[in-house]
Amino acid sequence: PEGRGGPGPARAERLPVAEAETISFEQLRAITRQTEIDFDELVRNVNDSLEKRLAEPCEQGQAAAPVTLADVLMAHPATQGLASIVGLVALAMDQGTTLEGSETLRWTTEDGRRFRTSLPNLAFTKEVAL
Image (cartoon, rainbow, N blue to C red; front, side, top):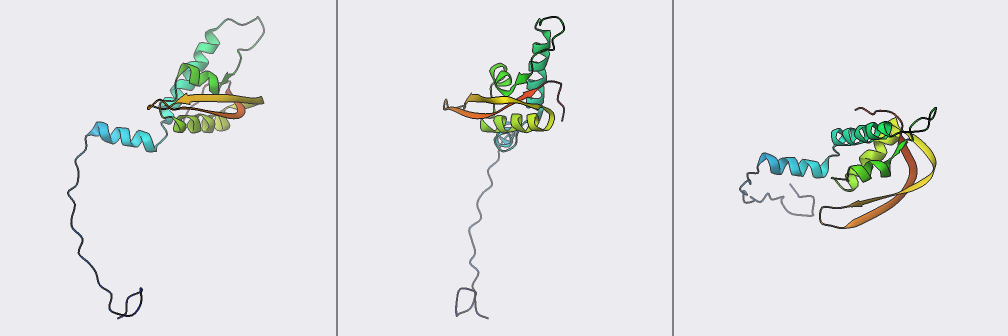
């Protein structure tokens, strides 16, 4: 039989077997945090920010101001960098509200690089859940 690459017989080559590296549970957890958004953490952060906002005094008859994504990030830094930002946006789009205008979000990566982005002004007015 001819191989797909052109005339001649198809050949299989034996590849060397590499030793599998053993990693600890903590290393596995760190790898997972790099690839999956920690929505449990983000829900806690949003709800904590809402609880603190509700505890602030406000004028009689007025509701507490909504908690924006920037408010959440000021109280709880983006531990997963961009993944935290994406997760907060997803939560706000699903369970929050859109206010007028836009806001600038800022975060710093573990290696010290600083980023910012401008997004529609998304906010939370009530407790969120998964």
